[in-house]
Amino acid sequence: MTKQNAPEAGSESSARLDRAAVWARFAGRCAYCGQEIPKKGFHVDHVQPVFRGLLGAKERDAETDKFPSCRRCNLWKSVHSVEGFRKEIEAQVDRVRRDSAGFRLAEDFGQVEGTCKRVVFYFEHFGQGPA
Ligand SMILES: [Zn+2]
Image (cartoon, rainbow, N blue to C red; front, side):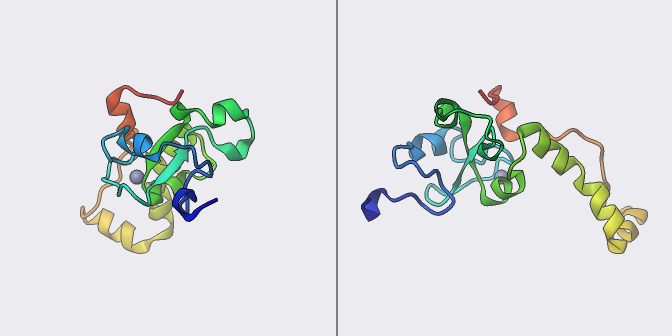
């Protein structure tokens, strides 16, 4: 493998992956949070986690199973499904409330407000779901 086609850190291991096409899928934005992501060095998320071992090679390598992602979202999503990631984000307010006296103080004085809003991922605004 030459340096030119070596996979980038945190990226898909297949040198055949069209990273430019994955990056362009949501106009250079993370499929989850919508923040702009760099053309080089972004993460390619397997929408259906490879870790679970439920996918065959065909599904695992399908372009529809690849979402461009910022580092933060990819690492937080980790082995979660899309719905598992959504639940993980929705649980954050309760966790911070439980663990941070500063958050509870700020909340009691109206400086922050936890909500029960459903998390909506950036890709869902495009009507594109996982395959
Ligand atoms: Zn993100």
